[in-house]
Image (cartoon, rainbow, N blue to C red; front, side, top):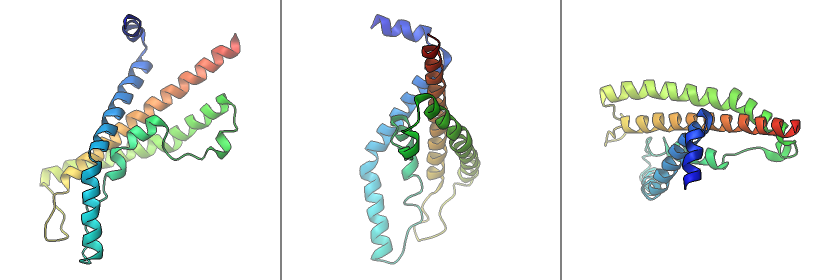
Length: 177
């Protein structure tokens, strides 16, 4: 235990950020796991509404993939095309991942989070509901969850970038020795 707390006091910003992002992702993954049963019920309602009553809902699948996405990124469970990258040396693999995170992942998550936050603020201020269906379901909670999920996903992406940079630095140090 002492060594662990001593390491935390000497950990750099990158290590502390990675630990923070990983913890947030773990919590969001746990929340997603506990929400699995209600999400299944929501999808069953959607299926029955769409197929039996010919009256599809528009709110059923808005945030399902985002809720657990952060834990998926952290654990490496996101879809990757490893046919090429798995054959690359460690350093080239890290560089390729860094480029993909910088060019694809971060712009999409940052831009998505920005737009979702803007939409959520407007939606909450109006207490927006769906205009379809007789229920007029509130949509603003979904927009808040999407915004939070994209923020957490962006944090986890930044943590992944920091880890890749640390791996490159470690490989460079090993190459120098």
